[in-house]
Amino acid sequence: MTIRLGDEAPDFTADTTEGTIDFHDWKKDSWAILFSHPKDFTPVCTTELGAVAKLKPEFDKRNVKVIGVSVDPVDSHGEWAADIEETQGQALNFPLIGDPDRKVADLYDMIHPNANDTLTVRSVFVVGPDNKVKLTLTYPASTGRDFDEILRVIDSLQLTAKYSVATPANWRNGDRVIIGGTVSDEDAKAKFPDGWDAPKPYLRYVPQPNG
Ligand code: BEZ
Image 1 (cartoon, rainbow, N blue to C red):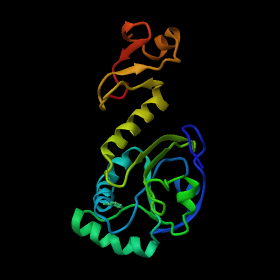
Image 2 (tube, rainbow, N blue to C red):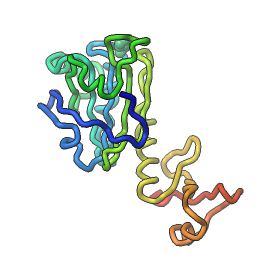
Image 3 (cartoon, rainbow, N blue to C red):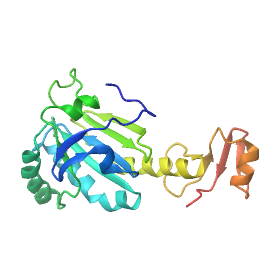
Image 4 (cartoon, rainbow, N blue to C red):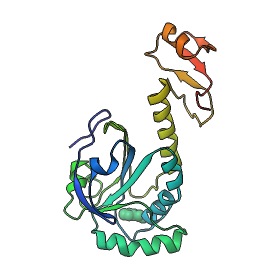
C-alpha cells in the first residue's frame, strides 16, 4: 500500500523487543518515528540503530516515540542488541518490531522488490499526534541515514503545527522562519505583532517564535 503525506498511518499489532504493541495505542497522542532497516547483524544497520539510540534524549524532549522494524524475528533483534551496545557504545532504548511475516513491511510498503525482494529498504515515517503521516523517506540499503536531519524535520514540523510558520532551505533551529503562505497579512499582524521582513510580498521572514 502506498502511504502518502496526510494519510492516516495504518495501525497494526506486532511483537517487539518490548512486548506486543498496538501501534496507535503505543504512540497515543505523541509524535512517532517508524523506521525500517534491512537486516540484523549487518554493518550499516548496526551503526544506524546505535545512532538512533544515542538521540533518544532529543526525541524524548520533542515528545517523539521511536520504533524500528525489520523482517528479522524478535529473538534475532535481542541477540543483535548486544553487538550494537558493544560496537556503538550505546544500548538499544526503543522497541524493535520483529516482522518475519512482513505484516508491517507490507502495510507500509517497505519492501521494494526491484531493490531487494525479501528485505525492507530504509524507510522512515514521521507520524503526528493526529496519527497522520507528516514525512516519508526512503534510503537504499547501502546508505546510512542522517538522523540529525530527521530531528531537524521534526523541529520544523512542530514549529509549523504550533505557529503556522514554514522553514526555508537549509534552516537550522534558531534561524529565521517564514510566515506560512496560507496566513493573510491581516492574520500575520495578530500572530507576529513585531512585523516581518518581506523582500517580496509572498516571502515574509520572522524570527523563530521559540528561538
Ligand atoms: C547493511 O546494513 O550494511 C546492509 C544491510 C542489508 C544489505 C546491505 C547492507
